View 1 (tube, rainbow, N blue to C red):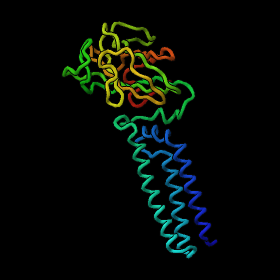
View 2: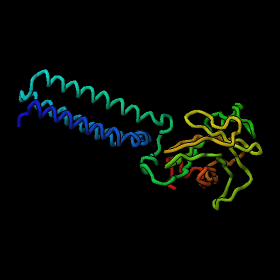
View 3: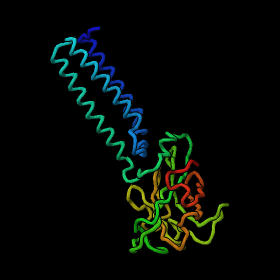
View 4: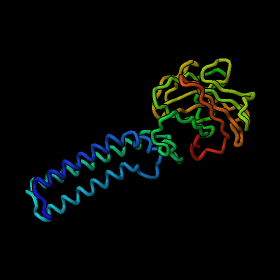
Length: 259
């Protein structure tokens, strides 16, 4: 079947509508699929398929001389612009969690957009950076600290007061070592988001958050408490109540566990 000018025009309109729908429905998913570094998001792959199909239709129209050359040239320009926009979308999605996607499975991608509060999930990254000091010192002191990441989903805006980390056992008891983000009568727990420390003065309120939130938390190393096999209890006080996660060092280093 030969293409007419109106037919090609309808094709362009249909394609742009589909791309707009993908853009609107896929924005949030693209951000969280960035946790899968080895594969491009499904939305990007779908976008590629649409652009490829559009390009083939333009090629068939050119081969059949189904429209004026200038109109076909305009369509080719549209395809080029779509491919450039596709690259922009892909780059934006892959940078959403730059620095946090090194080799583990995306819990956020697995869950999508939950309707209820999800998490917190925790993983230990080892003794890696000097972010805080000992006891109540919130400034770097020259010694690398234990580094954890905490992932939680808030379906609406939620206030987070503080985060606490306790030495524990397999029954979730609070034992004789603890790190708090807010209380000066404990070892400091530095809480960071996007590289910014949220409690530089042992602040009693960390902020209000919604959607998928990733916290980086740091605690000074005291003895063997961050060694493989040790149990730790994470507690988060929020406006929606207490969130608790018992975990064991070494059990979930390759990815976030499902709560």
